[in-house]
Length: 440
Image 1: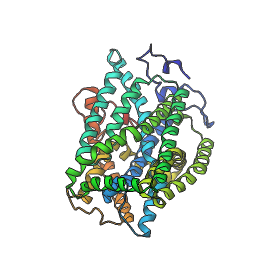
Image 2 (image 1 turned 90 degrees about the vertical axis):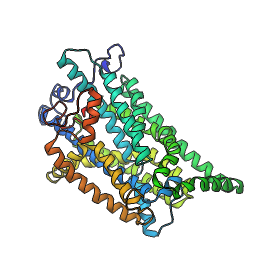
Image 3 (image 1 turned 45 degrees about the horizontal axis):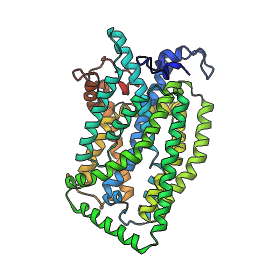
Image 4 (image 1 turned 30 degrees about the vertical axis):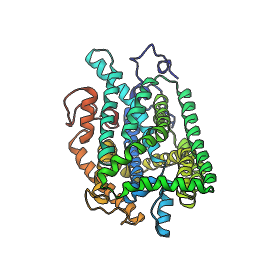
């Protein structure tokens, strides 16, 4: 571990560039000679593809709150056996798995932004201003997240990322081992705490007084469901923001730390097939039973108890299944067919922010009075099918866009704010190389 990561006296020293660092490691771990620049770029392209995969998983979870707004209150609308199966499938295999993957990639990209800023400063012959660059980026995410949460989707994660990112900025010199230990403690406390709260709620439900209080609270909140969607968003925002910041926020921050640690140790440059197979097997061995328990809690218990317990179980076991997903994808990408899958995913991952916001735009047009107003009128499995169709269109549009431009539409604006310059989407501009999502 390089001491530059932990010494606050060297604030202008970013993480080593994956390209130069990998080139300096000598023989590769796979025994195929030196780690080349092309190999490193492939690893960064892998990250873009994984980011698109995470985008799909987040979409499949988020659509539940559009198709059935009552699920936000912990009281999902009644459905048939197939609908219950769809809810169980999403809860077990997707809920709590993909936003932590997206958060991991955020932490990894934070390191890429750090090194990109250092390169730009060195090329311009000026001091490194990474703290100012990062703060402008987080300010942009904060504004985007606030607008997204109040106008489109109350479960926005961008504002939470902005706040957690500021904390990550202050802790960027943390060593890799302390980062991993801290992340583990955070996840353990939040996950176990939520399971404990669910258990206490389950015990309290047997008390008539608690049930009466609960029903009164739900009745008051449920009035929001009858309001126009714009008023629903404003009414729900304070409670959902608190949940995002104080419950999901710590989990996301823990994933930030793991992502930053991975970038410092150059995990993706050092992965071998044997390691990937081991991660996939161990992750599935722990994650799949956890997914079954999460799905059972979500659909088999009292809705409020079940959703709380499911979140806790997903927090505790979801990272293992997420690791298995990533390992399986990376193994797939090493095959001929897998490389074609990767190529299809990469453009969407390179403009993930635009696609994330675009998904919300489509969903409000389909499910709210902004458009077709189909909430509670689409079967849960059909809602998943709509997601798959929208994502397929996003893959196509992203490929068309990225053939002409260096970055997505929102990414270009955020990058302009990050580096305090005029927006540019043209090819050949700095940061247009594969895997440069952190650089905009």
